[in-house]
Image (tube, rainbow, N blue to C red; front, side, top):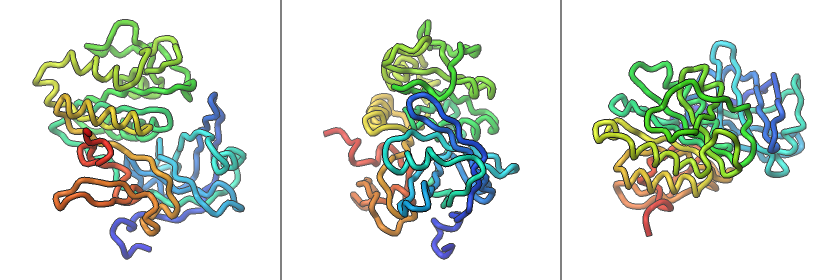
Length: 295
């Protein structure tokens, strides 16, 4: 299994369920004891989980948090089909098979310390993982802008962290990020109090427009969420001439690069090539994703 470089840190573990919380909008937070995965996971990694012993096809879930010392990993997912509905029935104390961590993670750059973390729906987890990583690095100034069209899987609270350039009244924040002293702002079209009434990318644009050229030169975008959101991130990256990394979501069968069922067209130095989201990604330079190129 470890003979291929991209599989060198993928582990198969019998993971014990430590917690399985239910949240509005058919969302769940799943906490698993999986020490090998917890040690090797990096922001942007995901795991392939067996939802039920009678369901052979696994489901890929982005990792939201890890504790390498305690040996646990945490996921946020939404019930959207047969597999995740079976997974939602699993209870603390039960075991499930975990394959992970999988995938190419986000890369951070010291010359771009203003990291803007853009998460939409179940694309929020990789941004939380990345935020936790960045807060431990000197010099980085992350800002998380998160959006959801169902109630957030946490109770938003008014931010105590000032974000210069943020529109008045946009004060709803994620408590966990506040506790980490990382500023965050929330967006939704559902009229949630304190949230920006619009898309996450609209709020990013409003904030970027307040930055000086020197400040803009320090910005890098990181995003995970639905395809239209990622396409919008790629457009605004072109508009402001900013680097952007996006974590793509695709249906997967094997999850380790063998079946090539999750391929996407990527622009390379040698021309367009089909890359596997599971192991060549899920993180790609937004400028290279063919589907995000202007028509």
